[in-house]
Length: 139
Image 1 (cartoon, rainbow, N blue to C red):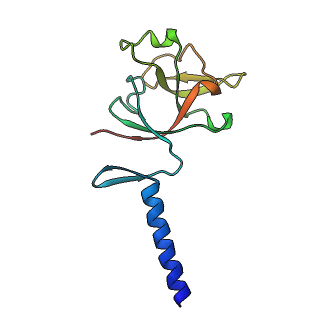
Image 2 (tube, helix red, strand yellow):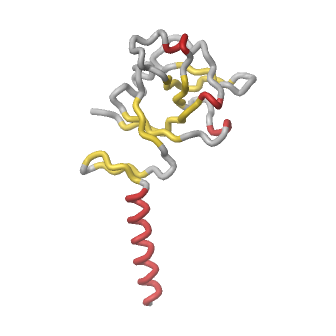
C-alpha cells in the first residue's frame, strides 16, 4: 500500500513538473502544452490570410529531416531578394507559405493561401527554418 501511494505521489510530481516545463503561459486562463514545439513566431505579411494574420502567434519547430515536410505543411523560410522586394516593408526577411508540391530535387513549391499564384522560388530543405505546427489566434 505504501509503495502504491509513493508511486502515485511520484507520478503526480513528475506530471506537474513536466506540465510547467513544457508549457507556455499566455494569460491567466490559458496554458499551452507542446513538448516538441521550439519557437513562438509571428508572420510578417498577410499572404496566409485567412489561415492566419500578422497578429497571430505561430507555433513552430525545426524540421529534423526532409521527410518532416510534406505537401500541405506551412513552412517559414529565407526569402530571396527578388521575393522580398514585392513587400512594402524592407525588414521582411522570411516567408511563411504552404507547401503545394515537391519538385524532382525535393525542393518545395510554395504559395501563400492569400496569393493567386505560386512562389517563383522553390526553397529546399536547407532554406527552411521552421515548420508551423499550430496557430494561436489574436482576438
